[in-house]
Image (cartoon, rainbow, N blue to C red; front, side, top):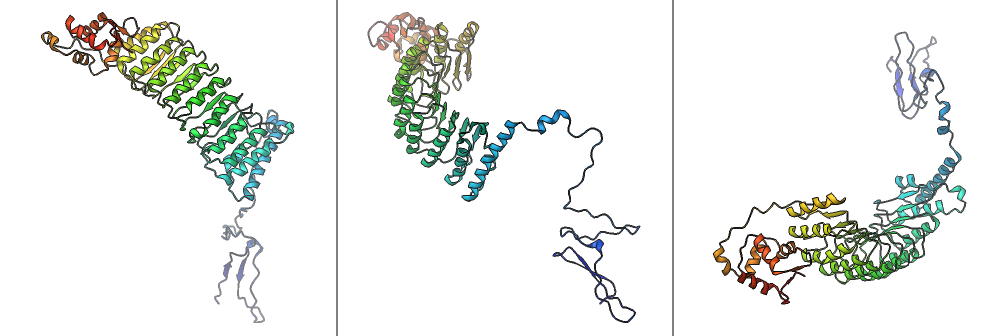
Length: 512
């Protein structure tokens, strides 16, 4: 063995052994020398032997298991007297922390028992007034610990141990089956102050809606219910109609993004009996035909609804005719959304009488409907002429208007506050269309009307020249329409046009 000492470092022990072969005076060899005390108890995380300084002393070793010491700052104490309120918690804060910690412990225990991973965002919200697990995509086994923990938190009858109560529960984006609906009902019964329940995109089956509606019929605390995007069809019509008709507390019901095509008639009957609902959202539900007519009939008899959202349905001609009748009778509606409802110019003509008679409607949304530019000026003129109208906001986004619309709008805004959103304005007509007067008498009357409209609908042009707004055109008004568009016409040709258009033989053209 070499005469130089050999140091052996072991990862399994904190000692350093030093082997030396030193001869004694008697000629015998001494065994391995004991390690120096200065080298004992080295951490297994740091096996570097401290190096010696030039003066022979060793550097001070850093004990990683010992917390670093900090020097006390000079001057006053770390805490001032003003910080006592933040250091010493009040009794209410102490109860609140104890209360929320209890819910967290219950949730963690159940997750461990059911072999589920606890969700950090859920743990942070337990004990608060608003709890949301939106878009966590939890299944039935993940939801059970959450529901049980919520129930245990608020089910205690001792109000002194409940400094906070649950007011809003959002379960959006998680699959809810019938058993989970029973959990929700138990929580709602335990949390009497619960006012907002959201179940958006939870794939609710008809059985779930039946159970939920049956409970909500007798509930008096929930004010807002959102069951949008659940692919609900007409097989839940009876449950929802019963909820609308008999519930005495819900003020806002959101049914957006379902397939309640033929449910409008039944909803209309329930709406006529409802006395608490203020907002109803039926957008994106394919409501058209008889469903649209039935819904409007119920609206005519309702006395509390303030906001009705019907965007992206198919009201069309029949639906707008029924809506005009409803607006003539309704006295509470303030916002009506008919965005993208296949409302063409003749359909809008049917809606105009109801808009003129209504005195409460303040916001009307007609955006993204196939309304022509000429018809927009007729619409704004009707609103301008109706002095009793309360309309303050008109939404025509995605619809092109003409220059006459701008002029009437400016006149309207000078008289009262009126906001309007639209796409753009068409340029002014550059002048009369060149035409040979000698050939006018040879042009067929139908072709004359076709040339008049200049790529716009003829009905729109005729509505613009209806001076007294009675939807009836006399011979003089028809002649003015031709002259305005630059078409000279003889009396003989004018007679042919009137005979062709006057189907009732009343010497007037009935536009309707």
